[in-house]
Image 1 (cartoon, helix red, strand yellow):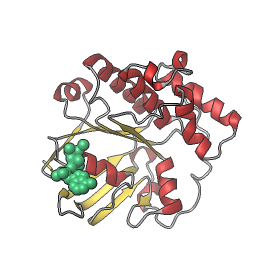
Image 2: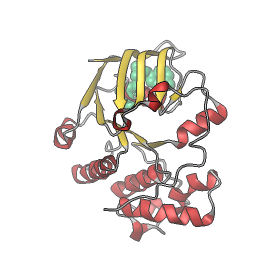
Image 3: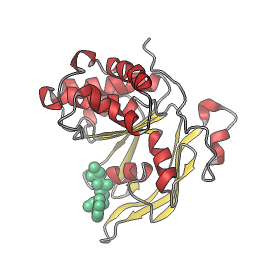
Length: 248
Ligand code: ADP
Ligand code: MG
């Protein structure tokens, strides 16, 4: 079984006043990694993203979020990685209370979350391996450590042989797998994927799900939005259904 290096993130042990007590739960397999309590999100223009959402995710969970366009799926994920702030309610992710989280603390939270988008968001003039390495360079990892991490991440997504290609030389599926490698190169305990299969044909979509399932088998918690009902059925993981800003 392929293992990504698990050297702890240098910032992981920093004490943080926002840490949530559930992180120290006695049963590590059951510790809460994501918690929303009565969360409401109203955007500045008055649009409602989420109305009243309370959910808990445990370490090692793999959950789908489904719902029609506009039901609040992206809003939910944005709140979890701190791209948006909740209007009301409490959010805890990986031991951080997200209320007012910014600057250094927000950066620390984001280092522990791998994020995958529908449109890949790769840097066009960088190779696959540079795209994956970039996040580690920005965090000040040594060249040696970067090498040690990038290779297994690319291997995990089956793209070692494309390491020196540019994004435009890749298929959509390969670009998405590159973005997954980038998301996991830092070995985060949580991966958030917003419609990661939205631009892919069924075969490539399933490859992405298989990679995320494999990651999950290593203990990574995965939260994935989609409106592909067939994929959800085939993947066979629990589903949270959003409807008009509520969990239905
Ligand atoms: P989904 O991802 O399920 O399609 P979103 O979370 O993107 O849904 O959107 C939920 C609601 O919030 C929609 O009514 C949408 O128009 C609104 N919304 C999302 N982002 C913004 C924003 N940045 N500003 C204003 N309204 C937004
Ligand atoms: Mg969306």
